[in-house]
Length: 114
Image (cartoon, rainbow, N blue to C red):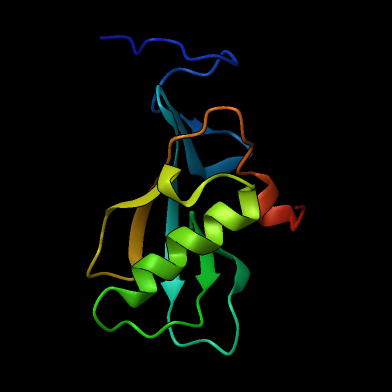
């Protein structure tokens, strides 16, 4: 079965050729991340395999690191915090983050643009 095309010509759920950690979905984007909690400061750490590596200052206690991941991505993309959530992997370092903002371009996370 073919996947429906989403704006921009990419089929829904398909990884972008230049960013295998990023998928376009109907509501916006999913970002595959690898999280390093309890870092000195929160920052993008490049790639970890086919995932975007995030260094997060919050500890992995009581969901603090998950909340910090969503806050970091929202702030970096300039979208409301309510539009970003950890969709899978809440108890794992490997997570899928959903960004319900089709107008933003998450590729800029890796390039360091604001």
